[in-house]
Amino acid sequence: MDRRVPKTGSEEVELYMRTYYSLLRSSDSIKIETLVESHLAMSSSLHEHADAAELDASALMYSALRLPSCIIDVDEVLVGQLERAFVAAGYKNISAWQRVYAPGRRRRTHFNGDSAMAVFIVSRSDIDDLVPMLTAFQIEWNKLHRLLQAEDLRLLLEPFAEEGRLPDAEFDELATCLRMAVSDLRRLQLLWGADFVNNLLRIGRRRKSMTLRLISGSLADYRRATASWWYELCEEMALADIDLQERPVYFVSSNTHSLINLLAGFARRFEESLVNYIEQFEEKSLLTEYEDLKESYHKSIDNFLYFVLRQYLSEQGGQAKRILQKEEHRLGIHRVPSRHGFEMETQVIELGKLEAQWFDPRLGRADDLEPLRHSNAIIINIDYPLGMASYELLSRISQGVGRLDGVYVMGKAATLNGRIGDMMIPNVIHDEHSQNTYLFRNCFTARHVRSWMEHGNVLDNQKAVTVLGTFLQNPHYMSVFYKEGYTDIEMEGGPYLSAVYEAFRPQRHPVNEIVNLHSVRFDIGFLHYASDKPMNRGQNLGAGSLSYGGVEPTYAAAIAILRRIFYNETEKFIETTFEAIPSY
Image (cartoon, rainbow, N blue to C red; front, side, top):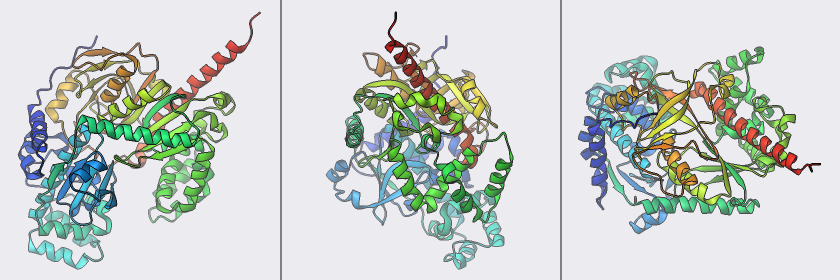
């Protein structure tokens, strides 16, 4: 029997959180600068060189990827849950502000075109994510500011402000002056694009001094936001003649592309267009990869096509998008964006309307999947939320649907013992939010995933810990868990299991207990793929990205989830068929 996890002893992390939560109780704005001291004292694993004079390129990139590009202009950050809360605080036209997006975070964010940014949050986890990120960004901005004070650097940059790019010789000189690796500076250039030189000049002109104001952050407001989301979803589904209260539901937390790509077969249908698209690239690595896969008899080409399809649709797929939308509707695939409050797409997939002939071959033979036509079950797939938003959303779903037949969660995690790209399958999750340690029967084992992974390892029977935030951990924190056998660090598992507990028990989830969920009557499945190694210096998502390398574990997890759902529905059909046969 697992014993309860001991306290990590990370008083610095707790002090940091107490500091910003106490300051945010103010009705006025607070200065990010007031958080710098406690941020530095925390010694975050994601901000290893926070207190050093030299730039922490990984922390800067990690933050910049998860903040909209307008952060360069932002001095004032407003945080709230619902539009009416902003209106009550005097910001009457937030919805008319420009919508802005960050590559690495899905949050509804608006920019007033000058210096104010409004951020909509779903749970307190958004605060625990956003505050350290803003603080880290400001710290690293001001380091760059000091370095860019040198007159010779301004003279180096100014001639290339309009073009936005530096010749190689000047670029190498700039990296040396900023004490950065050329590869790190290249990644910053890739992120900022044509604004790269101008952004550096603006950083050199002034220090960053942002303020933060929490417009609303009550538990009641979080629940109003999720109630509004659920009401919108039910309304939209009613127009498609789907009553969510009457249908058995499989809940999936994943992304917005993997399930649909596997079910609808678009990539194979558009293969010729996708190849023509990559042939236009200056960099020929994708074309070479495609040609190698076509020549190989034992490697699947589908993952590659899914990767290219996503880029194709985002850049030049206008007509293709219209065709796909029409096909999705015909196949019973409904995409429902959240109209108010937080940023999230929900997908509702009617299993009985899908056509097995279009499925990815790895999901099974079309003839074997014919029983799906008789299914009235649906999949509700949400674009994986952050931290406690998982609890709020799954709690709302479990209250509103007719019957919950499975809860399946896939997503990125940090690994303390594996490699980037490995798959981790836990059956114990310690939750730092509730201080509960959850024991459960994961419906997935290594054999369910191994067949679809050519490169990474598949590690089942793992122990995971759900942390409060990506920045809110340090080496001491992680070493305590590692000594207890915890190797999988992620952000949603614990809150999801708290919601699962309340879906089958007549009481609120406990606190600081060992909780046995083995008697839950529906499937529980968690699949995590390793995206970073925080125990290894520099190996985090600020130092790079999974890119195409992340496609294999993503689709291995998605295949395992869909095969499990198909198996359950086929078993239901067989049981129903035999019950209908009269006995003699």
